[in-house]
Length: 195
Image 1: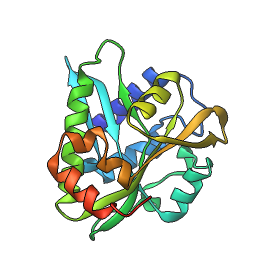
Image 2: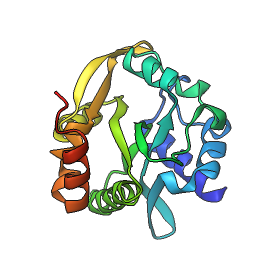
Image 3: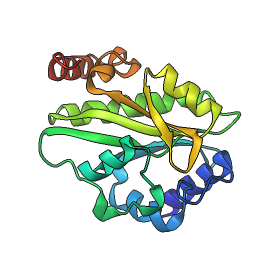
Image 4: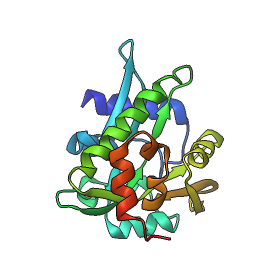
């Protein structure tokens, strides 16, 4: 519970005053992070969380809302998320990839932990047919571009907020695959015909 709350404090400190529909809050994210502790990682420095990522497995109806720019984080809950038990493809939503100012070297640790996350799922034939996020800042937009993501649309809450995705074929060509032969092979084989 303390780690989940610390991640929300970090998000609010970095993102500032986001609209309530997209702001990190205890009511929504503490139960999600507690129910799915394997779906997020953090970097702690001197007893303080300074970086984190999280990945939620969305239901198909919420994936559709996301792609339309209408997914509201304030409406998410544990029962609206998938648990990847069986092999297959899933859609992953990243509500936050955060590196606090002054702690940029932590990004390398986040990248390594995310690649390990992809590898552990690939070993069970659990793959992402897409990964999505909403950029709420110029830095977020730059990161989405750097990762090779495609901007689908603007978010309904604010036209300056972008809705971005990286499809399975994109994952096969991404920095994640360049860091892991397993990720490259798994995604390359599964999504070779995608186009």
